[in-house]
Image: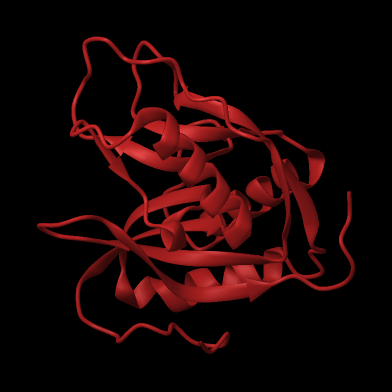
Length: 197
């Protein structure tokens, strides 16, 4: 994957994009395994593929292909000097809550470095003259999505807390017309220096 260009084949039209962070493979596998052992394979739940487990930093929605280079430029400038930092995932939960669940997720500590990164990315999105997501930043790591409402939702599984290092920001494309949604990296912004707390 090249860092200087969009890595998926260019095509006309728009892409559904978002910025995110990936947890370590060990953390993602551990959480998915624990959740599946607790909940089984219910038909109302669609599990994420391990490679698709992520923490959304900023959702963009549909973006014109021609605007992506401008977006990459503003984000590169805005997060220049960003150091790697630790992220703490706390527990399993239904998100946004058990009354109106959309996903099964790991809650994430809203640390200073994580919050600051989200704010910088939002600034860069505005600088690129793109619409900024109006929703407040609520960090979580999605493990599964509900296919439909469940009348007797079980208690969210007890999952082990985890800690991993965020060393890069990824611009993802969300693709999956007519099938399961998959997340393809379009561009990687690597952080520099040692891990901060």
